[in-house]
Length: 252
Image 1 (tube, helix red, strand yellow):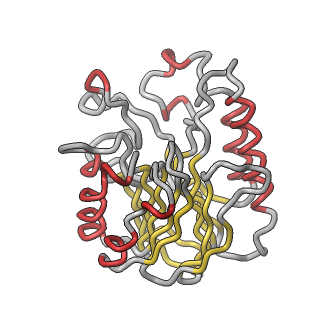
Image 2 (cartoon, one colour):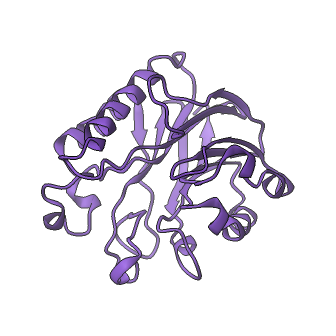
């Protein structure tokens, strides 16, 4: 099974690129984040024509997540308990529970969004306890955290900022400690598996990026290959994130 995750940074702006990417990469299941559209505005017809069922959760503003599947899709949950923003979707797809998450940014350590981000992480960790033991699952998306200093192009520039605080990194570590494996994708032509590059100052071309998108997989899933699809970050009107593509086998 081929699974993938991609923060598309607006499905409206990125639809032609998404459809081309689906045709080229042929994922069986794809988790999307930051769709920035309401459920009624999601391009259901176009994605269906590409061969995918869709679960989308969005309100038309700055959030929105989706799961696309061509191996069956049965929605499990469209909300994280205690959280109201459309940042969470979970579904059963071909024997695999897939959850797409778009963790709040946090803005700044002194901003009210920062404790909200930590609370969101706590709710996400608690949700894992509700998954039946032994269920093959992947938790994928934009977590807005760089787990280690190696996941930031220059850690010195982020001192005192969100995305790298001990509290945020501990929240990510708690997800892994719950029985999930951080699938570190090969970066391709570069030696660092970044998934996000700011649009400004030529960050992508200088490879001044961050690893803030993740695939976390449970036991019983054998990862056969994994890579950051840097090609999807190139060209005209790209997202500022690149997809992660993972080929895996269930039950191994």
